[in-house]
Image 1 (cartoon, helix red, strand yellow):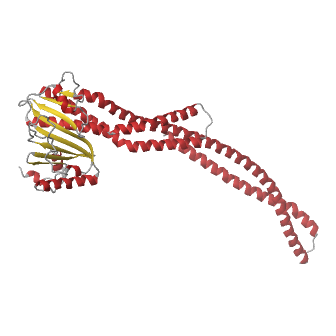
Image 2: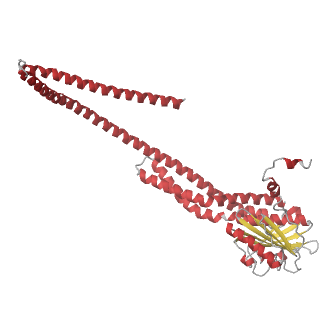
Image 3: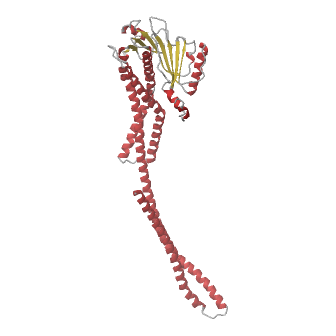
Length: 453
């Protein structure tokens, strides 16, 4: 039975789908340990350069160089463990010192202390998040009092938390310190190495996603004043149109077109950032729920601090995004109204033009009747002249008759014949015009029936 699957056609992505759920496993971290985490924004060229830089680290440390680039790469070099992860718009490095020396200041030694000199400084990319995590074993070394912890955070106001229902204690300030890094201090009270690894991973993700979330806030602040100006301008135009004031339609349409172009430019610049902010905020909320925090007396928890400081920033970004969409819809509605106004003006001009053309047609018809009368006389004159030549030829051939009488008798006959022929031609063209008009009305009625159906 185990060979049955080999005879079935399998999806080409089947193995990848299985591997995806295991691409970023939780780490197993002992106590004590020192962790340094970096998140860097990169483009595709820098992402490829980072992998080459990671290969160089293996050469410097004397380890086998990896040849295949993966979404998550992890390697242990003695007491140094390195984890490199690729995300949608950034990459992250986690450096773990698995056997730190015991020192009074837990931040005296970091996860990057064991890196070769100069390697970290040449790392490609733009740093967004950079912080140290010091892990102490409270089962071996008793946990200090909060006033003893504060000097390690340069006397900054602390945020305290007892995650996992009190199995650990976390201190942080959510600020940059003198070395340019943030800091977190974790005391492991009764967590296994696997549980501690999951806790560290959640805290690292919370801090990284917090900073990635806030990248949209400057964009929102930059865009908001311009949207306010456009909103006021659009409200003025709408009020003018509502009051039925006389305006230059061409100028108004030009202003609306320019406004719509500016809105689309803002949306092109901010849509990805605002969408990413909402996604990162959802991840933060889920990670905070997984912490299962207890309060540390006198201190805000991580959840309380981020809910108070981060969520308003997220709401600001969402408000600007929604305002962009709302303004775009309003500009479209006003533009449609203006186009309707212009079309009505064009239709009025067309009616006036058709009325003028109808008057000119009637005048031309009257002139045509006049010309027809003159043309009958002119044609009759020339025809009588031709008959006169014919009569003279007959008289010259020896036929005796009164030429003057014959010519006079031909005049009314020719006049009548020319008039009848002209009227016949006129009625023929009039009948053609009526047939075309009837066909047009029939087609119009047919189209109306189709629309009703």
